[in-house]
Length: 118
Image 1 (tube, rainbow, N blue to C red):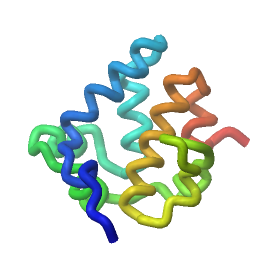
Image 2 (image 1 turned 180 degrees about the vertical axis):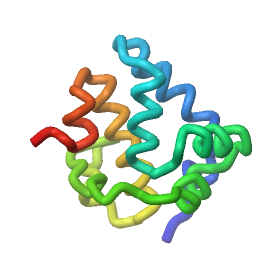
Image 3 (image 1 turned 45 degrees about the vertical axis):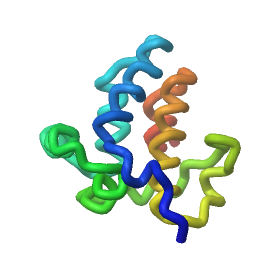
């Protein structure tokens, strides 16, 4: 398995970029946090600790308390690749988060993003 640069990239450097991306579209940091907490099972405090420790993406996902099983329902294209067809598990986890943040920036309702809409 190829080691991608993003695996070793600090989550704390990308997190503010997620926030900037959605704020430009009228969404909020709180919504970004809600998505990340839903996806990973971290509490707000635990996520903030991970950011302070400057863990990389690989550590961030490996240490996640409970990856949400509903994340498998995330479908679509991110960075030109269908997220559901990504074979490398770590890359797929990262792209799930990218796709959810992208959906937020595109104005989707939180219920739909978090796959709770019936």
